[in-house]
Image (cartoon, rainbow, N blue to C red; front, side, top):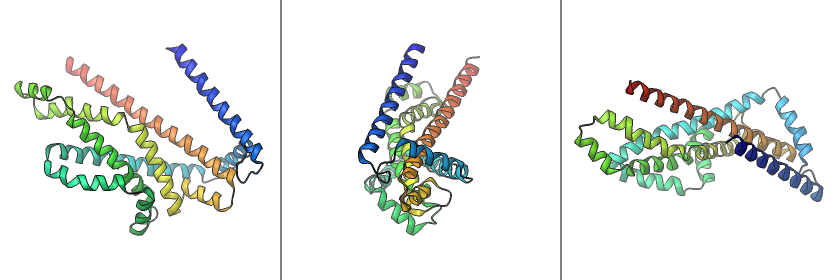
Length: 259
């Protein structure tokens, strides 16, 4: 296992070095920093950005908006997914709404949000609307795929509804969401940043990206892209941490029930 992990890390490092090398060659070939800045110019801009007094506040606000959009989508997806599973009326009422959200272009959602909401709420709203249909469909599909024979057996043995929800439905939902959680969280971050770019939200990565573009500071744009990648990785680590805590708590509960 350790040997496999070490080899994987070596391959990732080689891939990163190849990417940086290709980037450097492309920058040299183009010969214009305003089009393709060199890795060194990007690094210098990154150092300036990190050294700025409002950098941490900017990161915090964008991460908070991303997590807010993600968690609100998650909670409402579980709620409405559960309702749709046991209510045909709710499922039919939500179907056109979910299909509409899945089909509408993101830019249209952002523009409408700019009309309806305060600029500070636009990124969170956009992140929520884009991710909600994905999570809702995942929850609903997970519930629909529960083995009917297992449910029939539970009814035969008189298993309580709360036990059924805790031991069957919730694990199934969590398993389904775990398969898409990292992707949806990354998508939420990208949508939030896109919303920040157009809404010019205060203390935002998107707002800083737009500022660097206005000044034609391409190395600054590249530097903020690097920051976005780091933030995305940080959010993924938070998600994995929460998942690990939940797994430990579930195992502890099973041990206590066994005792």
